[in-house]
View 1 (tube, rainbow, N blue to C red):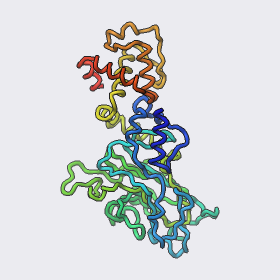
View 2: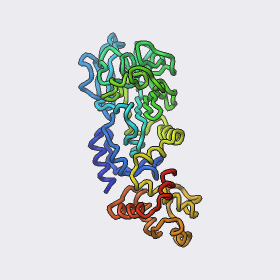
View 3: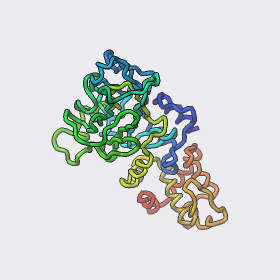
View 4: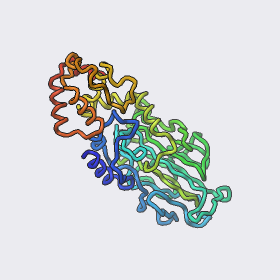
Length: 372
């Protein structure tokens, strides 16, 4: 039931990322996040270009909701026309965790990310010669008031950019050396790390490192990565300047990213203690129950040497010790609950058993759960 409800809400909130399959929890988070929690964290995410935002004099054509190219005369190249998404990523100074899509499965994340692939040909299949004309692409993020013509991402207040013509990063009129130049045939990504409070960019699957960070103890007006907090009220939009005949294709998560974002997230959770902080403050008691049960079963010799997703164990081994470990649940009942929590298919019966368990455990055991 939860899978169907989760799919319906995700598809309604993010039609550009709609999935025809009933999604599960992303592989790298199975056992950590349940479907009910993913449902609670769903909000609209950037998933398609905003055709109404494009300037009428930009000479941009968008053959699909996630692709565009310049279709005007050669002499008009270099006028700094931009496209952005219809939905922003929420205010990064306030968001802590949200549901997103990873390899066609749903995951809890604190990292907003998208990629653009710069084609080598025109829509008609002709090779684009970038050396003959001033063709360029700039990728980044911008606040709602960013102009749709005459500026590249990062040139105006409330925006960040990484430009292909010089490899510089921008969050103001003057750029700074940051990464390699890029152009046709390249895949460029832009990310917001809400946990570390950083803006970062990638090129052909490689993380170029933090471009902008929020300084601890920032004085004066509240700011996030140097941008006044008041400009972030309506979130940040994925924004790209398009001055090229090459077709630009956007990927907001419908397809796997070239950059290994899942590994980045896994390292982030491990290095910052994100999982423990998240569990302690936001996950329902069901997940705490899952953790303490799993810990205690490991203490009784179960799960050892097994894959984390394999929760089978010998029914004749160790169950006599359950009472001594305050489990107060029968073996079959415990297995049933663990599997239900793992798969996110809990029903009223499961919650009643969980509630009963938490009423029966003593204070010392609850302290152990909180400290796990």
